[in-house]
Image 1: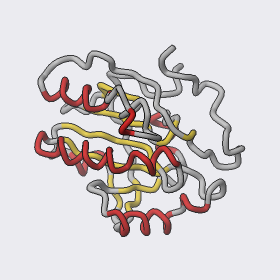
Image 2: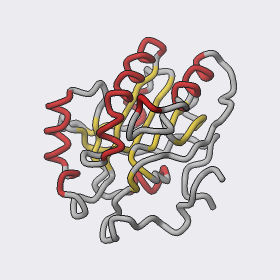
Image 3: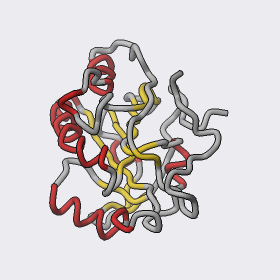
Image 4: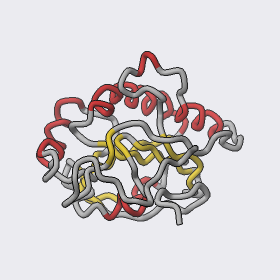
Length: 194
C-alpha cells in the first residue's frame, strides 16, 4: 500500500487546533469549491523561502473558490521552533491568508502520507484528491523555478479539465517524526514519481 494518499481518494478527516484557538475540520471549508491542504512548519528553509510564493498563489486563486489550509505536523522535540507557540508567533508576524493547524499527534500527517514540508494536496468539489506533490520545483529559490505544478493543477481543475500530472515529488525537508532521527522517514514513504 502506498504511504501517500492516492489520487481519487476522499479527503481524510481531521479536527485540529488552529493558531486562533478554534478547532477546524475539512467540513468547515465546505463552502469553498476547492481545497488545498498543505503540510508546512516554522523552521524549514524550503518553507521559509517559498511562503510568499504560496501566499501569492492562495491570493491569486481565492476568487476561484480555492481555500488553502496549512498543517504543521513536525515534532517540537526535533526542532523547538515547530511548537504551537512559535506557530502563533509566525502567524502574528506574517498574517498568512490561511488557517494554520497543529497536528500534535501526527495522525493527520499519517492519514495523508505527508512526506515533506511543504507538501500540497488539492481536492476538488467532491473532496476527491486530484493533485499531490510540490508547488514548485525549486521552493528554496522560487524565482529560479521552471515548473509551477500546483498552479498548473489549479488552472486545469478550475477549467474543468483533468489534471494532466496529478502526482509530483514534494521538495523540502522531511516531516520530523516524534522519537525518530530528524532525517528519518517511514520505510514505505518512498518517492511518489520515479
